[in-house]
Image 1 (cartoon, rainbow over the protein chains, first blue to last red):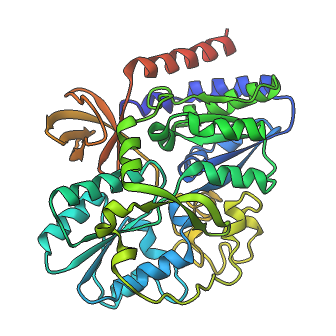
Image 2 (image 1 turned 135 degrees about the vertical axis):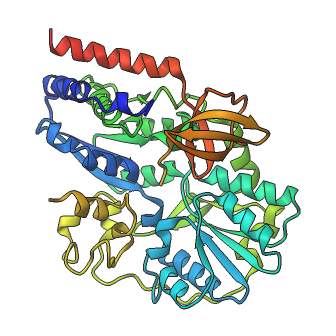
Length: 359
Length: 74
């Protein structure tokens, strides 16, 4: 496939690996923020190609993983309201809430449907005017513009039975929070598709504050290897900065149309992250102007105090403090077919990725 | 979840475009982009084209990579 195959060529990957061995002198730890990057690194076995000086740890960039118990419990409670249809991206349905999961509620007969695009939710709402469709909005800056576009479309079509429960989040505050928490890293492999929307400026404060390099990269093995090389070069020359490796997709200014839509529909709010607690101004809340589409404003329900799964260390893994091997549940009580915590559910969750590629 | 795949634009029809990923065709929203034309490649994410793929930048990255490859095997 064009724009994929050429970035998976073995000779190019090995050439960059050779160059890395030449330039890497000091011990060097990088965090790949995005769950998609974690998955790609393991899938293509890139760890094995890195010199022993370079270490990679996974970060908090997996929307399903960082979704809070409170959000899941709210979604589960909404699913039990008569005449409600819940629409959601796939993985979320399997994440255990405090006492149930969307999957279990679906088995109990509640109408919960998996969609690939939020636009399918709009279609479902149009076809079921006597029902109320609640879309579970998860994802970072990559995904949130689609939700914003859908809300604007719903308003244009005067659709009154489409709602969004927004757990959308933004990336920079959590990266800053990790640095302030003292995560021991020397640079960030930054998310390619988040940055395609936001551009590069969102990372400027982080670099100034932390003196850590940030390289925005794509998801093919050559992209990742090249990004690691760029970060090693920055580190070895003592010149941390924001660079784009993923030039074919990411522009410094980002996608202006998507940015304008985000600003028009959402405002920043303090938001809960699994394992990380409340991070100031890290979540996206639907603005007053679009209140008619905000599930939280239109459905009143009581959600009991959330209960975190016992023994699960997903939170510490998301912070880069622990790895799945440190968890006594990993691959014993907690597996992809019977997950205890969110990090084992999502295909790009750190635990699910380690489980899949550990052999 | 932020994964996006390159898809080729076959035809454009108002706010949506018919795109192909190998042999699979899909109707994608192009609400987030300006000036999408048949033949363009776009990154498809959750039903939306979120950005175009820039063919010149793509070639430049490959040129740099080949340079690394040639230097490492003189």
